[in-house]
Image (cartoon, rainbow, N blue to C red; front, side):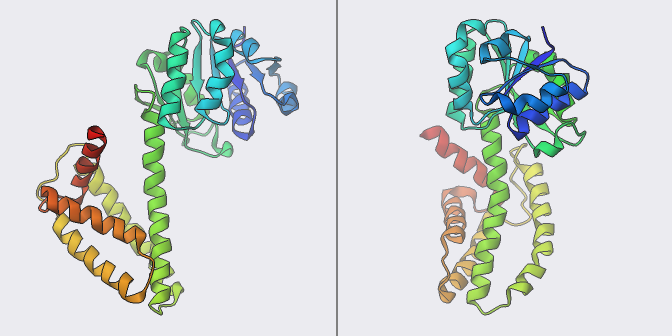
Length: 291
């Protein structure tokens, strides 16, 4: 028996296996293209010829392949061999795929964690790297120290299969929302005749405001406290109306700012006019619960 197995030896999977071996653990590996395992085998990993052998070799198996759906496709044919084993899936994918994977694992008698790696392969094994995991707390209790070997800031964040895909979607939306805001901002500046370097020089100022928004979100949303706002949703709506006027008057494509204005307008219409803008979380989450 080895300490842990790794299925999937792309750049990330290979980095995971290497970090586990560097921590002194014995590691069994499997990959469709066996030649990718050569450097790991040279370093002491045990190469097997099938997923079944990889799962059998250790109490826990880390899977790092394309998606949760792919993980299901790899493991479902060997479901009868999963009883009592722990599968730590660090692949990506949507919420429905994660739920389907966990249902299959549970039916097979396997334990599980779904994780998200917040790093490039070069970050694996570093103290500041976080692998965020969801699943039964007792499974995290058994394997959390191993996962922290791969990222010192790793932690357990939830119990539902969809928690990690949901968190990924939330974080990606926030990051890319900023990027797409810059893209639309650049377009309206160009249409208005402003040198884009002038706009680019102001990005650090915008980043400072983004930090303030992060503090506001952290202070209000987890507590559900949207009263006594620094600026009300109605104030944001008035500012967004001005923004929309400029986009329209310069003939700039306005899908993104229009989405923001329309959400603020709906919030005002639905009774959030005197609340913090962050109260719109409740409005949008209510949409999901009613669908």
